[in-house]
Structure formats: structure tokens, C-alpha cells
Image (cartoon, rainbow, N blue to C red; front, side, top):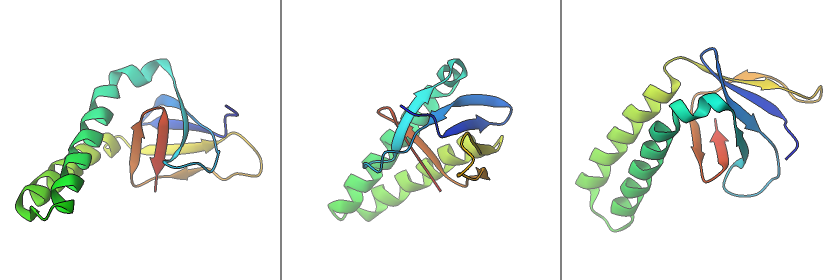
Length: 109
């Protein structure tokens, strides 16, 4: 993977993002410090997928409750601040407002 961004959560480097225009997200290469937050990302992804499934079958109360839990987990992920530092001149660094890491992929807004 060609590293395009270094991903910071607070002062810690979570890992590196590449760009490959594939779905979902972009390739993710974890740094050593990612292991401390890996369970938090896994839990947020699991809860969001459960919420989507309840929403798909029309069980709105369960979906809404799980979406709120996923939002709380996302808030925990973002609390120290998340920044993408460009590793190539043609890219720009930025702070993000949402971050998902799962199955070796990373997505953000």
C-alpha cells in the first residue's frame, strides 16, 4: 500500500491510509498504537451494522437505540481529535468529523 495519510488520534499515530478508490473506504495499515483502540472501532462498527439491519427490516425503535449507541462510540473515537496528515505534496492535511476502521479499511468525513 502506498501511504497517503498518517492518521492521528490525539497525539498517537493510529496508522496510515492509502487511496485505491475501492469500496468500502480506503486501505488501512495500523501502527502499533492502534491496538489500544481496536476494540472501540470494532464495537462501533458492530453496533452500526446491527442498527442498519434493524432499520432495514423496519424495527425503528431498536434501530434508533443502536444508532444512538454507535454515535456515543463515535464520540469516544473522536474525543481526542482526529487528524489526517498528508504524506504527499498533492494532498491536503485535515481534521475529520467521523472515522471508521474495520476489515483493514478506513473511512472518514
